[in-house]
Length: 252
Ligand SMILES: [Zn+2]
Ligand SMILES: [Zn+2]
Image (cartoon, rainbow, N blue to C red):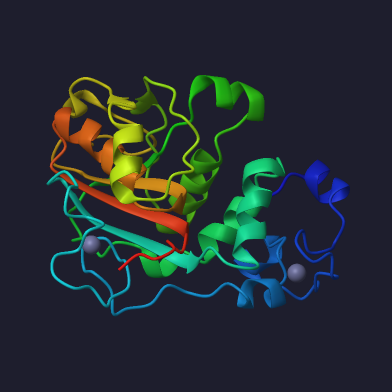
């Protein structure tokens, strides 16, 4: 729920198109700061896709995108294509400084929710920012997204499980291989995942399902490297969810 102060300071207009927000929203919709028109412009990522990485087919031969992923990383799914509309939403999440936008993005991510067994303890793990970038921005947008998903999906969020141990160059090269090399060794997980008791629910162990949360999936290199760090710490099952998926030019 937004604070009274935030309500007061925020105009009743859509953060993206500045159209007036209706006042008739109910439940979760009442807190939205992106209007339905803008949300309808977000184009869902749909199957057929590679069952593992969620990249749409056609593929010829083995999937090039996820072939080198660590074993623990079972699936990755994204809600919408990073195209017109969604790109502005991600920009607002990263630079707008308004936590409520994360609820709007999380609201579009229900289709990416993993189907877990009733007894499966699962925990959301935001992709950490490099310390320098965190200082510049003041917040980690993936953490906001994970917290919004945690409220929606009723899952705990492990904020400090992963850390960036190496600054990485801004990812401009677009081949999956280059990106993997760029983020190699970028993350470290707390030693011994089994000792971790994050969030509201105790008992998260190496048998838990670790759900990595990031704003955008480009080639999956970041998710793969974060999953590798979790795997090295003992995690056996890692999933990845993102709001946006970038279109990779010339990828087949
Ligand atoms: Zn709008
Ligand atoms: Zn794949």
